Amino acid sequence: MARISQNRRTFLRILALLGGGWWFLGRYLRQSGTREQRLARVADADIPPRGALVYRNERFAIVREAGSVYALSLVCTHLGCTVNVAADVLRCPCHGSVFDRRGNVRRGPATRALTQLRLQRDGDYWLVFSRCGDHHV
Amino acid sequence: MFDDFVRHLFPRAVRENNLKITYTFCLGGMAFTLFLLLVCSGVLLALYYQPDSARAYASVVHLEEQVFGGCFLRSLHRHCANLFLALVFLHSLRVALTGAYRPPRQMNWLIGCALLGLAMFSGYTGYLLPMDQLALWATQTGMEVVKVVPGGEMLAAFLVPDAVGSSQSLLRFYVMHVLLLPTAIALLSLLHFYHIRRQKGVLPYL
Image (cartoon, rainbow over all chains, first blue to last red; front, side, top):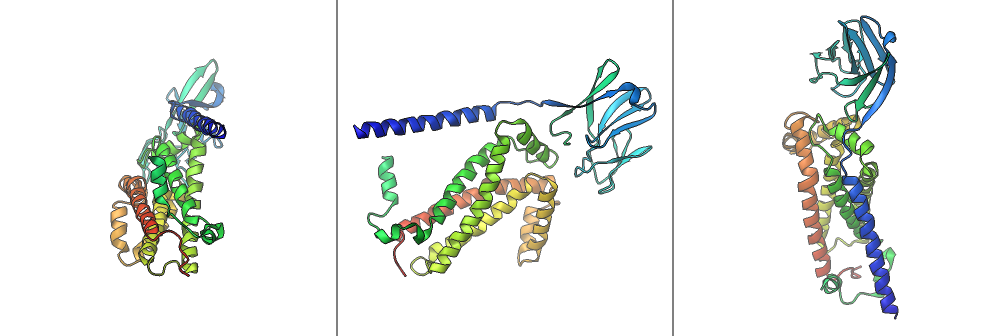
């Protein structure tokens, strides 16, 4: 009788372990996709005609140039410092990389352009989105 | 059949006194258990990690923030790695202090020393993989240290053909960390256990 009870207990323990493991693995392996995160909602009127609206904490800037509006991540593509926005260029204070107003590299050590964040028009506002990993706040 | 196999792993008779936990503190056994846990969690982490210098950090952030249980698994792997090193070191210390390295177990002592070295090297190669600032500069410092050791220049040239954190070196660290070193540790561990079994387990040599 005791043996049967022991077997049942072992069986239930193994079943619980396998079930728990299966559940965890199922959720771990499920494709989570590239979920977007909304960084900010910016009024169109707040963006200067030829300039940039800088959000230092969120580490991005909204730029208006030649009638077009775009958002640039301020995370340096070299080693992740926050770049400073000057009149004509964006300059990284850590290792001296320089980017133009479109985010293209003018001077290294960075080799990749700054990431452009997705913008979506919402009436008189702009919604700024970032994909996970592209722009780490 | 499995029960028979497990029974053959252990000696037929041991002294009651040797079964006390204070005889070995079970440090080696705990270290091997952690090694198995490290292998399991490492395989799961490898399903999301991208060994490319431009994408490695982003893939770790993705794992931590977007994947269910990713943060837990990464923390588990890291803490187990720290504890694994501590246990292997304490196990070596116990063997040294109790004189368990003396004949006929001198060969197993040497295998154990090799395992300690491999465990440390494995920890070092794994440290670069997240590719954050700490990883990059700690590995850079480690490489400078390696270069002043005899033969270190050769090892550094093999591990880092371009620059620390560049694509080629990251790939080599990755291959060492997930393939070569765990395989070597597993094989040497089996040899270690074979020697223990052959020498009939923990006998009172002292």
